[in-house]
Image (cartoon, rainbow, N blue to C red):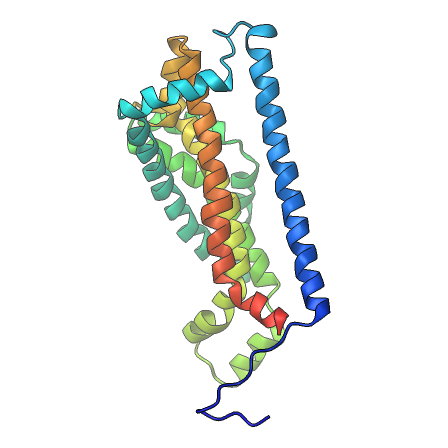
Length: 280
């Protein structure tokens, strides 16, 4: 059929097989959401039953009591202030770690740099976050350099390893061809290496951000006068366990929100072209 400007192309009619596959996918998504929500319902239900039956409610506040406590914390202004402080620290620490880790990962293209950074990256991967938090506390006390140091030391190695693995997976023939055609090094990095590393960079962001999130709260428990970790420490010391579990549950919910809503949605949007190519 001839297509002209006056007559737009006819819409592609979905076949019966495509409709069947789409219906199967919708059914599978509904099944996944059902079991996911069922897991939350069972967990919260058992938690509520354990509060007051297995343990005293003052020692193990149930979800209902935590829901009643949350508005009090929010209205006091501490909730937004604490989450804002924690996210600011995480953003600064992980931002520096991401930049440095990416540069180190790119540098492994040169064998000398690969040997130079190899042991340092290994130490960053294997050392627990508690060690860096304590080192930051001993050296800087309650100063911001302490938590920046701890977050950086834990997360930069994750970024560096993911980027270096992406570099090693880079097709050597493609690089050799670009060199043969005289493509400048900076242009080669921007148009060949960086696009190839995009999936590895997203993996580094997801894993590094999740670990940095935990280390940030850990450093706040030891060496901070504000933030989520600080609120957990104060509420546990004052034996306000309803507030303590409220902060813990808010921490879990917000971590899931960042992972499932923010990071994954941004990743799907960035790699949307892959779905379009696979569907054609």
